[in-house]
Length: 208
Image 1 (cartoon, rainbow, N blue to C red):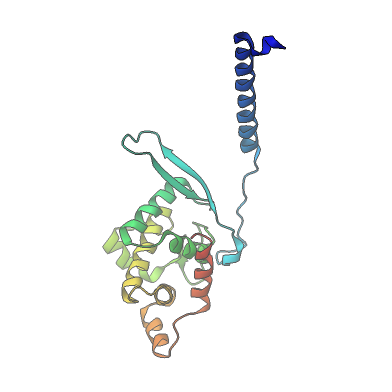
Image 2 (cartoon, helix red, strand yellow; image 1 turned 180 degrees about the horizontal axis):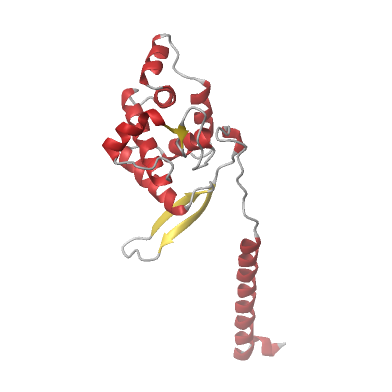
């Protein structure tokens, strides 16, 4: 087997190594392609936080970046990448945690963009029809079921709720869910959390 140590043998070893590496890559790609799609089928528009097991799924790399590689991490939730991009931008604009907004969407609509509740709450973040007029005036919203406009409406309301609650997430969620008047009355009675706020905070832990 001295020929195995010759230059010719060295070339053969390198060739075998390249083939082995290619086979590993092919196997990994095949496994990824054949992985079944995750199904999302919430029973209703008020799905509980326990319905989902959120996780970071994959990252998208901006190949056009020059000085630094831009990486966007998406979540394993039934929202298209471009909708998640808009959600990330809104969270940055309104200084909201992405995990909080995702948790609100999960609890409010179970990620159903077409959800309409019996109390006239619309879309992903369940915007009540009582808010349509002023949101249309301030934000130019015309379609509260359209995901992008619904997200902007919900994030704007949640941003205002955070301001009214002095940054306290529990209280802000009460304002978002109950309205400022009802939330203020509850605060006066010493109530600073509800089953709704607890559900959102529990769901939020899955996106942290």
